[in-house]
Length: 419
Image (cartoon, rainbow, N blue to C red; front, side, top):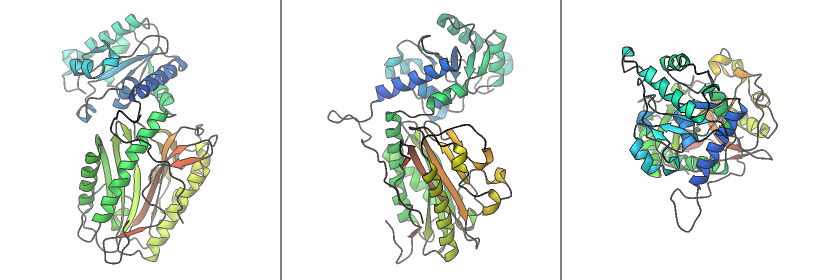
């Protein structure tokens, strides 16, 4: 039986006020930048050149909208602690100087092939490499290794041609982002609270004739009304489509007796959710009840194992082997009994899975991650999927996903209970 633990809830509202503190965004930006620069120094790097939107936001406290996420036309050079301040190249420098005054004049226009859209013979990558080399010289870091998180191969080769020592920089950034600050945890709680509300609307909408895609539309509308800046994905899976897990929604019409599970992934001020809940249209049969209870048992076992000093292998070991719940091996069952860090990215440290046993990661106070499990009904009628987001505390963990999960919620037919 899934049992609820005391929940950690968001303290503040999402609006700024003159009479209540709320999230201190200046503190958020300052602490994230400082942690990044310390991690870069500890990694023995002169700087990290970041292209991923989440690393850029962590270092600079800036954003330009989701349209630019896959263009490779935005980057920041973040020097190690004691070596100066980050420099941002952004497609809208005048706007950034106005909206982000904390960057002062450390903003310029980027040079990019736009992931290859600018033809190779134009030589953009060479101009880009000279731009970065000049900045490193100004920072006094031209002889130090520079970490990269993710970039185009042609741009990487151009940096090397300029004599820049290029190494992996993503590990330093993940080191910085592993433990969340107080402000980050509050934003993660607020993002989860938006999904709490969304699941209420979804529960009320589940009935025969509603389509999986209708529930996705409801989620988008609710989340954007509440202030979400991006709805990355809504998995909406009903009936036999849930076993095996299809990981996407369709136009399937919900019928009486269907189990329906959803995963809502969105971001608020950059901070993500990954948050599964399962419902039943009507009343569950015994196989469906058993599947939900078993899934709940696996989630609870992981939550009970979480505390500072525990290895992620110890958490993963409480879950069954892939063959025990209907999959051929751990590779094919990956994501079904799973834990992953959440923050500005959907998957951060730690990654908890039987597929990757043998990692050295130890849980630490201040980590925030999601724990999710899946179990198909033995009669093939559907599946249960439950996920909780937790903050690691000194005594264990606090659940920040507050929509009820202690039982399979019935919806959509006369006599069914809806919260």
